[in-house]
Length: 318
Image (cartoon, rainbow, N blue to C red; front, side, top):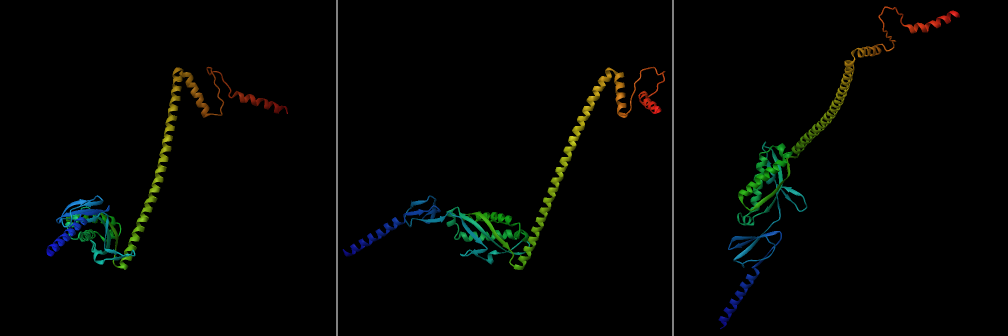
């Protein structure tokens, strides 16, 4: 009886353990920033994104793996310290440009998990694959770029090309990761003296561009002033043109009126025009109009002779 009782207690104990294990492993919680993958007998079945308390079959039938939905940052070419400073990782940062120059390049990749199943089961270390893909993408882009482009105005294009190439690689690897952005932190020369010389060249190039922009601004200002003066001259010429046209139209109207009068009485109009012309040509002359046959001899001018005669008589009396 003692053996049977011992076996019974052992069975009850095992049952209690299984019951406790079943109760404690049948519930799980999903946070708002997480998503869970329910695994049944080693196979991923469902993805749970609703936050809160959820039920599942007890272990070992089902288990749950949770991954974050937040955005991660991968630093490439340097390591960030706790005090905020950073150290260059030479093996990652050192690259060769298309014109065979050595540069140090570091960047940040923003990424997140978009497919938890693929992230958990398509690779043993997806973050290491992301690091290797980033290295491959940036080295390929830097290797096809000139050093001037990498150090000056070609950084934006390098960022865009690196992102496109990295996205294509991750789609090929199919590990459930999506790249949100690539930010090129810095591209510099490894030698301080070479770096200083290149900085001097860059400053000279910027000064040159500044002078060119100032010259273009001055040229545009002078062109604008010339255009304004041209418009003013054209405007004055148009005004003078209109004034002369109006004056000519007025003269034509006067001439037409004179012609109407002339057509009605040609002799009188002809004499009037002749007299007005003489008045304009000889403004101080006295004009006498006589109507006779011209046989009588006349002494002209009569009025000046009459005005001079009294002065002569007065002088002879004295």
